[in-house]
Length: 234
Picture 1 (cartoon, rainbow, N blue to C red):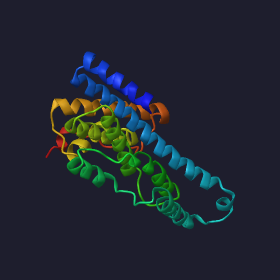
Picture 2 (picture 1 turned 45 degrees about the horizontal axis):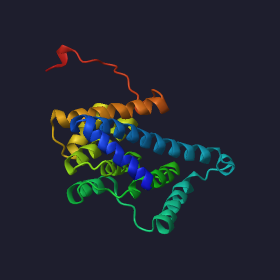
Picture 3 (picture 1 turned 180 degrees about the vertical axis):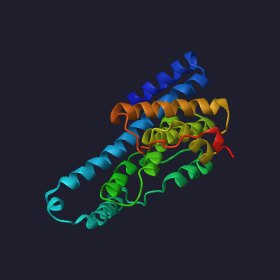
Picture 4 (picture 1 turned 90 degrees about the horizontal axis):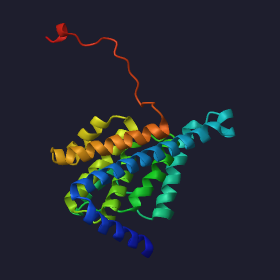
């Protein structure tokens, strides 16, 4: 640990000498985007792996006991909360908003890996919830930890948490522009070039990460059957 902290200190000293604050934020936004993409890819792959294992199991392949799977998943999450985390798991985006308003953007680092375990167990076993909230929570907590590691101020930390949220959405849906709009709207970020560019960098980095691991498949496919024409204006 001491060696790790020493390395971080050396990086910070080198950064102050050679990299401006603006460029450093751009580099961090790229890093946050890559990490958010990895979080999203990880949470999706774990969920699909659990689903595949259950579908291939001997018990379920010969019977129709799928209706009990959500109950089993919820029980596993309950035992995890009761005996491992030993405290209730915080809600996703409300927890982030509370940390931004009351804790200077400091999010408990347990939120980095707890969603990676509880969300796949719930969804993989058929629970009627989604992976977007847990992915945003994990990526935002990771962004908060990185920001704290590099001694980032409160305002920039809030921006990087927005980058993490945008990156998670962009990676899951492969929609970087929608991800930027979400981050600006939900986290009340300034609509300026100084905030838009890091958000764009994070979103694109996250999408590229998703393409690298998951290919070019998109979550929702659609075809435009009737295109817009000028006569449709009225």
